[in-house]
Length: 152
Image (cartoon, rainbow, N blue to C red; front, side):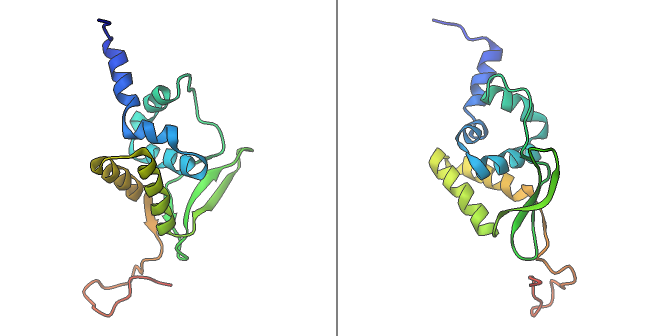
């Protein structure tokens, strides 16, 4: 029987987490947003997660998201993007609305065959990533039954 060192066992355990599996499976826009979602939620654990998930990983390269998500008054989900040239593109639209964001991550969860608890963790992370919803009326009185939550 081959003995596995404690460090190797930890690396195997990390590689089998839904976070590592999602990072390996995600592509394109989904991968870019997922990396930002995970960095926003697991800041201290990101470097080990990326090093285990992608052996030889040193650092992320542009383009990448440098902010959390925000829902604009139009409903579009945006984030700031560092371009290949190093310029920061503010409030770049990644999803036309939160339904498109939800559906994109639902497809990822379906493709990974995540269990219910893993799905819940993923969507809690996505929810936390959206740090501002500019559609909400800041002057709304929550006790007023005729108040409108949406500004537009």
